[in-house]
Length: 84
Image (cartoon, rainbow, N blue to C red; front, side, top):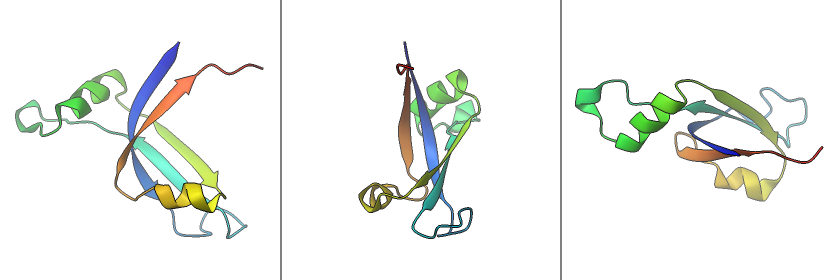
């Protein structure tokens, strides 16, 4: 089984939520299009209906990974089962 969520990225200030300043805190929140008459991104309406709310927060230390995440951009978060 796979679940895909579309989420918007919010980057916390460096060192804000972590004691190690080399770790960047990122938070993702579910996207949505609340007004059917003003929908500019129909895909967001679909994801908003299937995942009406949600958040994911992570600390990222890898500089290459940190540089790929942009404040305010949307990303797909894929959930798949992992072995124990």
